[in-house]
Amino acid sequence: MAKHIKNSNIIFGLLLIIGLIGTAFEAYQYHKITRLNDQIASGKLITDIDYPYLQKFTAAYDQGNKSDYKHAVQTYSQLLDNAPSLADQAKIHFNIGNNLFTFGLIRRINDDGTFQDEARYAYIQAKLAYEQSLRITPEDKATKFNLSLLNSVMAKNMKAAPKEQSTMELSNLPIGLP
Image (tube, rainbow, N blue to C red; front, side, top):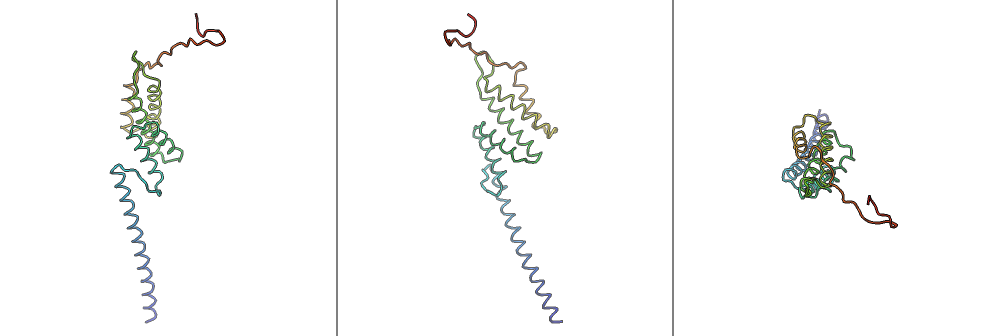
């Protein structure tokens, strides 16, 4: 009987040690995730290499906040190469649309009221990004609102600005009609 109690104590002691190790590991993971959530909530960049997707996503978001819209769109596009989930794809396309829309808004309008080519291109690409996001999550109200706002900003007959005819001569032959 004493041997049976001794064996039981060894087994329960091992289970206790395994339980303490598991508890310590879970506490470490909880601390790590809490720290990560605090960084996200405060708008800081994620620097933990264990979370490369979040690291790149926050970097793209930060670039957009710093008005570096072209690089933000490029970084978001790189996220799409990693085959994220459908919900994440919708968020990425939404953010791409937001950055392109904002980029188009800060471009100038020509003297005759037409959009500059950069703004026109940014609006068209933003519209495509919003539509792609809506294909994935058709019930997303924020995307619907931004797309309707974009459509109200874009002219129905948005044309390219007229290009000036070049009068440069090649081999003594003028370009264009005399």
